[in-house]
Length: 132
Image 1 (cartoon, helix red, strand yellow):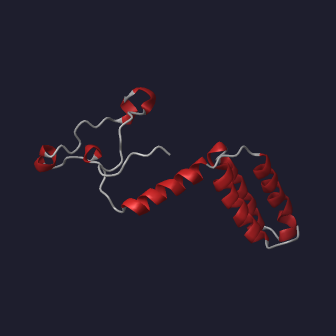
Image 2 (cartoon, one colour):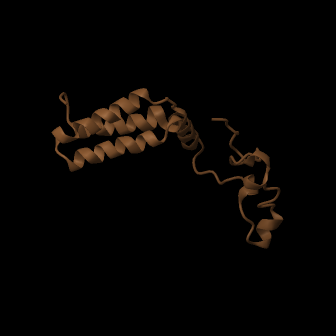
Image 3 (spheres, one colour):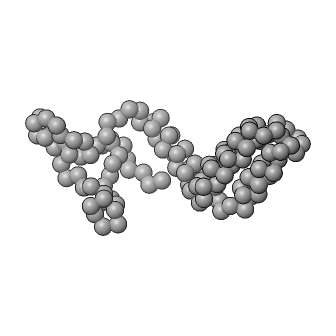
């Protein structure tokens, strides 16, 4: 291969695996990491095929940027709202006072409801619920 340092190329390929393929085929990131590790263990000439295979896998894999776009949007909300406490409904009430203040009240355990999603709003009380 020519045209650049293979360590840089491998790093960019791994980023591509997470950013552009992501949840559509999560195992692709492991294949790219394996190719990078092959490069680190063999010389450049012997590891070219591993890097080339990683490029082919990335090029032919289904694409999804859902994880990337959701992470970006949630980080923006976190930056705007700061360190706001979670909604008290999802917090335990280990003291009598917290119980009196309704901590943990009306909480539904997602694993115990149909479809394993209760639909509860887990956003802090003063943050509008967002669908990512």
